[in-house]
Length: 94
Image (tube, rainbow, N blue to C red):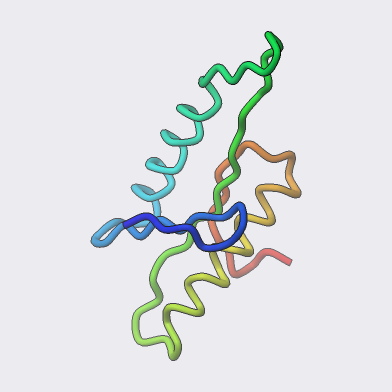
């Protein structure tokens, strides 16, 4: 399932997928986006994407909100680390 979550943010839900598999899907999409030719007035404009990946936490209260917060934290880490990358949520990250 894919849905627009914010102005420039999308949410991908991958049921029955571990974090390694979700990260691989995100990386595959990131590479496809990066390879696209986007021309404006004959000039190539690079197109990139950053991804934050998080995994469902069983038995957590307010699971959906927690999952979104964790993915968002990972996304901002990806953006802060140079953009155009996939980062996984890590509870040890400050």
